[in-house]
Image 1 (cartoon, rainbow, N blue to C red):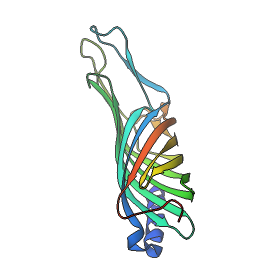
Image 2: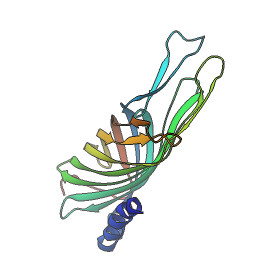
Image 3: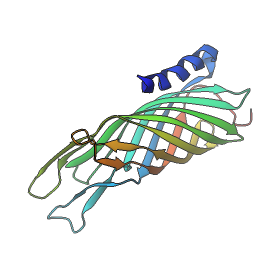
Amino acid sequence: MIRKILFILPLILTFNYADINLIKPIIQIGFNSGGDELVTITHDYYNEAYTIDAGDGINLEMGMAIENPINNFETQFLIGYKFDNDSNGDTTWSMIPISALAFINAQGWKFGGGLTYHISPSLEGSVTSNGALLRDDFDDALGGIIQIQYEVANSFAIGLRGTFIEYQLSRDPSQTANGNSIGLIATVKFGGTRSRYR
């Protein structure tokens, strides 16, 4: 319940004081790496094994940015899908991240961070050449984000994101996986002409 409030409260407060013209749809894509090793996949037809770590994955997100140009302040609310798999797609590590972020804008740079909540983290598939099955479900997890970005063009920014989170195995709560990661992130914002100097 507390976790839901942490996300809903800033959203309500932001809508109360936001001009509808300052709400912009956004999409983001990130490439992340780090955390504890979850599994190593081997195939007879490959010379090298593929390792999936708890922080690894491609992160696809969409949501909205709410701007406050007077205070050079911006909040973002995002939902997405994060996944990593071996080259054959036989084994997949995936989850649904929901994030609430806040940024200070300074002449094209954005500095900030916030909270992220990962829903249904799971690792499933076959991990050996003989098709041994794997299924590990983890509890939903709350974590933190820090992020820095530079707006290289109007409505397009690239930067770095650090995520700090830990996953707990559902069938054995004594087993946890460190999901801390660092990643490259690109953001596209839609809706109107903007200037980073305003």
